[in-house]
Amino acid sequence: MIPLTAPVGITVNTSVTLVALVTLSAALVFGLALMPRPSRATITWSVGFGVAMLATYVWVAANQFDSAPLRALSSGLIVSFEPLLWLGIRYYAGKRALWPAAVAVAFVAIGPALLTSASTSDAYPTVFRIVFSTAAVFAGLSAWELFRLRISARDVVLPLALISSAFVVVAAFGIVAGVTGIGSAPGDELRMLRDINGVGILLTSQCAAITIVLLARGEALLRGGGRGGHAEGDGTALRARLARAQRLQDPSWSLLDIRLDDPADLQEASGAAAFASIVDAFHAHVLGALPAAADVERVSDVQVRALLPGTEESVRRELRVLLQQVSTIEDSGPRASVRVSASVGWAGAAVAGYDFDALSASAADAAVLAQDRGGDRWERAGASAR
Image (cartoon, rainbow, N blue to C red; front, side, top):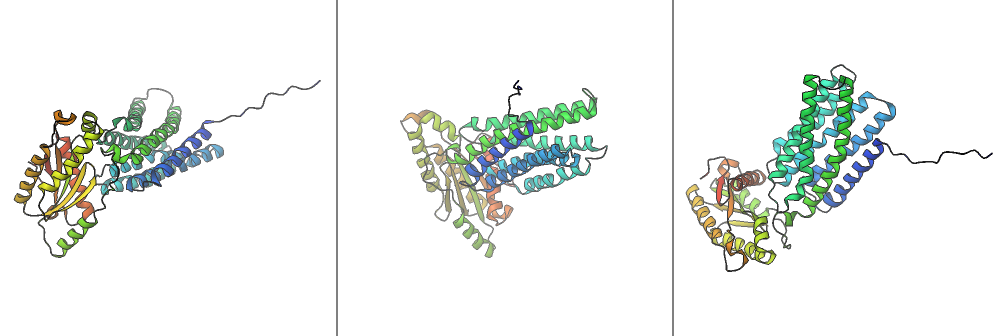
């Protein structure tokens, strides 16, 4: 009699799936975002994916050797992805990121260390909940920053924004369950949170990879451009002028961050050809409104930076003229019913110093604030606005 044998099957457990999908997501970000578009944002995101990928390998090792310290370390590394994700979004938005970088790095260093050191003690459940909840705060901040990004294709950020919001909801339920004691035994509840942590990195990595690649590869189009041919300015001329002003200790210099309001709505309402004309008119009006002594740099189709000398009163006067000039952009074409306006962020060297990066970040924050308050206005960094 010929013995019957069971068919040979291939089994794939959760750990293998975790490693495979997170590694795939990391490869997509490295190859499609970091390599062709290196920037502070893509570098930070890539570091985050590197940490997440390392976490999955430690997770597999922890399950293989049934090691509590390794399991705790993997959990800490997994949630460390959230602050790096948030930091990268702030870099992408052009916001000041000195203190956020310090906070993110501190969490990445302290979170896994705390969990590992407490893995064999009775305090581990409490430490785990604290670290998990703190990571949820970063996830909530990521969702907030994503919803505030001014890009034309809003649906690009939805996958990552929604999964980050879900992280906050899960953490909130975990806190309530831990405080009230609702649910299963403490050990089972912690095991459930750990499993959710693993599934969460699967979902977050996939959604993050999609959003990050689209943001990095389609940056010009998403920010309202899409015409190509204009590289982002590196500020060389503006840096040189600021350096000369610093040597002469001349504080009467201001950096303006000038942005076209609602470029996505303008493009949708007017069409590609008419929007291209609006962009040309925007840059022409900005150049025409600023004094000849100003150094002007075209950052993108919808953004200009300008460094100009003068007293506060003279800068205010130039700003009023500039906003009025932009608001007169019109013709008899499809855009005739669309109102064109601009918002300006103003940072003075006397307030923000002569460091170009700090001055640029302050002006960018002020420009975003001006747009958040309705546009067609200016806001001054470090002082009350008009």
